[in-house]
Image 1: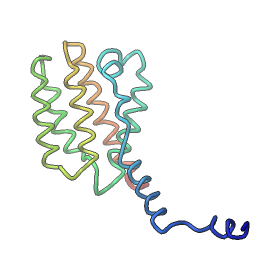
Image 2: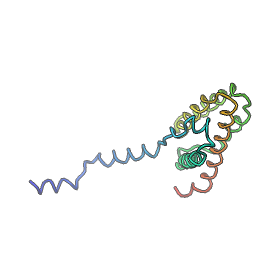
Image 3: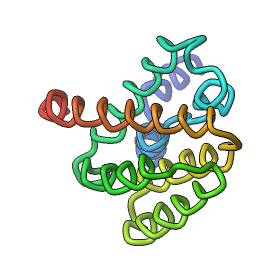
Image 4: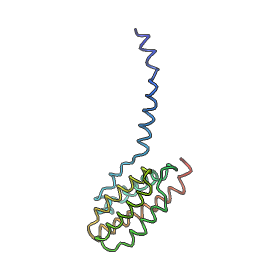
Length: 157
């Protein structure tokens, strides 16, 4: 009886390895963007700037790591250029339209979809001049770290 147990321990069901790989791949395709709370990004970024910078750096590393499913600097710059032109918080909703349009053009890109959801949540949190300015600074940081990771870390994946 005990010999049978020992024999079966080393054996795995054929689908078991595939399931483990799929779970691993799902973890690789997800990034917890809930760290980018409206409190951290829009209301008090200077209070915990280093934490915000670390989260952005890690997130942009995630955005560029998969060559077939990544967000390009060009895509971010299109949105960033429109974001910095926003002077009134009441007009920032227009960015959401451009964001959704780009997401539609990249409908198979799950990474871009995640970015869209994150930026949409933050856009909807912009209420006044201060939160608009903080959103622009966050976006500037996102573009800068994205470019850095794209240039210097893309070859390591």
